[in-house]
Image 1: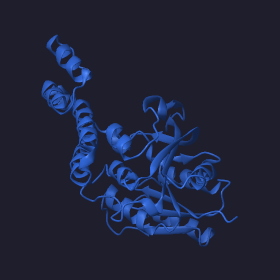
Image 2 (image 1 turned 45 degrees about the vertical axis):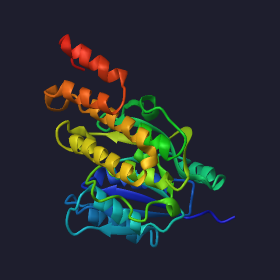
Image 3 (image 1 turned 180 degrees about the horizontal axis):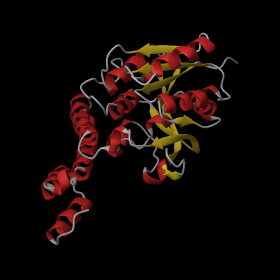
Length: 297
């Protein structure tokens, strides 16, 4: 039986040294029918030259989308998305790594159940400088299975670089460009909205790199934008999928609780009160009580 084509979509910007490791981890997979789609957002560190060298070394293996100017995470993600031609798309950041058996395991799962439109697995989260493991991704993000309802209520519990999607189920518009940074959660929700499901593989098949350049590293810059993008995603979901009203309210409450320490907690209680207005959250009530006593956490 012919293996279905898998597009490995890499989204990258100024990650040349990490990107080489990423690509080598993909090339060493035991699954042969792959194309490697790399969307580079106008890197200035020599990434382009390195990619041309890979393209020459492996004719027909790479699909390169090299931006002439920097356009940001979401637009660059769409460059990768629309360049993919595989039955499945395995998403990767340019600084992350695959472990042996990843692609084969996810394809096997999804080929055996046509209702699975997203599969994901556990990740080894590691410190780039020391190469030491920090924790397992799903130690902090309890794995779940289900459909849109589960994804809306609990947010992005699937690590992006662990995620494989069935391309035919993905949104026709790709990633929503109203969300400049954190557009992946809405993309997952829309992928499952046709009735498909997300399924977890209880095995570590990838490594997620933590370093100073991570988009989520800044407390007041990109991290705030991530939260705002998720709040906007809630509004978009509510307008498109009103049947999930209660799940959207639950997710908005969790997002507002997560924002309580923004700007050193100057609006700590206001965020918690706002969260409580959307959904009853003991965490929010406890937070307000503790802040009255002088504790903020």
